[in-house]
Length: 395
Image (cartoon, rainbow, N blue to C red; front, side):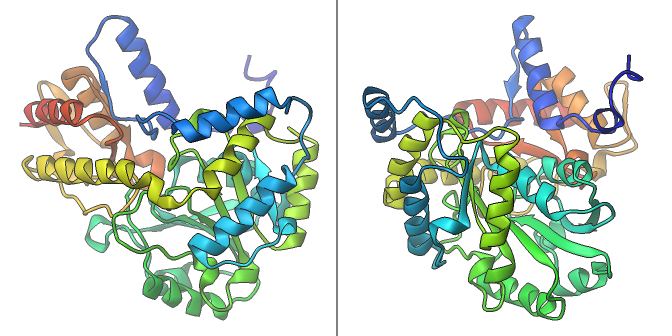
């Protein structure tokens, strides 16, 4: 029936993170003891003070359509958050609230990209960037990095990737999937390259901003000369364990914000009313309320790094943020494990699912075919058991 469907959908790849999560759930339903390290979702509950704000909103009858770009009270709270955490001066006219940061990214791509516009993607990158850019007529231009460079792009690589067709650069810091965090010095060096190309815009995905073990965080929009060319994307899903609440937002030049509002008005209109009221409480909270959760993630990071180092053949960086490990597994390519030939990361991911009952995601989905993404957003006991199984399966 593919001939009935549009070329657009036929050419769109399925999200491999969601596909692996669905497969893991299916195998669990069949009674298999699957440990899923595939989804990027905190295993914490939404903090009680945020849930109380949602209950209050229900009691106060916030049950009607919301403004397309978000409640003004929420946009004002987001502006204060940007000033407090990122030293960025936005006004409510620069803010658009959407149904998750994924919609925020899609809006930006739709309003900024024309057919054939090139978008630089330092690889690895979040799985949906590539397909969102393609869906919007853009051409993703991957710039490869490796575990040896902590999966960070260099100014020289960026300069080399720029062509007359380059319209944008998209990246995340802390990075999903590598956990790498760009510091101010590194972002300043990138900014010096972009100074020579004033027509290139930047999408900075900062959804993991607060899950950061480096001690500092820098928004690229705070680098001199880049504020008016940067769309800062954020949300409450990861830091506040609110993945199901579906609230993301952008801070952007006003003409881009207006365009995103126009786009959203024809697609979904305003985001969920109760979730927006709860998000006001979340973004107004001092980030110190997250300290216990961040400390738990750091302990897990230290645990999985130690366990991964005990497995011969894995090459790792030390992730400074988010909750992923992104080991280079290329030393296993071309080998036969328990009768199965491992040609690439896809094969190894499926091998670990079938032989170790551990779900991971192939790095190919993130633009790095030598790696696997392993989420450590689960308990230390499950992580210890998962790495025990992985070690045994790879021995």
